[in-house]
Image (cartoon, rainbow, N blue to C red; front, side, top):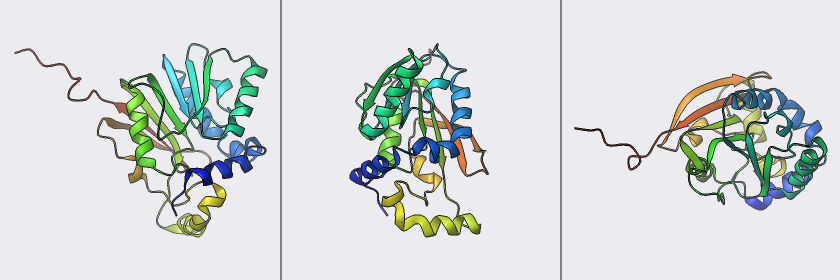
Length: 217
């Protein structure tokens, strides 16, 4: 089933009041692992699908963090968190569609999308946008659920598939749907706690042919 933008907005409007205590709790380990890696880098970071801002307090102060989300109810909670915890390195929280980012090309050193890519209506378009706004040599990081074909988990995922609009995400989602950008080179892929349900994928953005230096003769 294809999600549309209105279905996503409606789902996360329902989720916003309880998100931190439900899926937010389940996703804690993967989220913290991702931020720990990002903290070893420098520069400007874009968190796509920032939600209620659960990850924001964990970023080190030397990073300049910008967050976007489609759901205003989630962003309201994220802004409250930033104010309550005095997070001065969060320089922007914007309501924005991940498939149409209002940032210039090559704007960020790191772009991270945690538990997002199975939510969006057009994953390929989102991946292209993530790549576009990342600087050459920068990193795109995904933390996400990818489905499997067999076993009990595969069966459960297929049973949940018709309810994508209700829950706000795709339970059946193959990893091939994110392998769509020629300038993103996969550097690392690993299963995360709990129970290996979630996967981290790290991509390095390579310079395009037009940007690569010409070797001296």
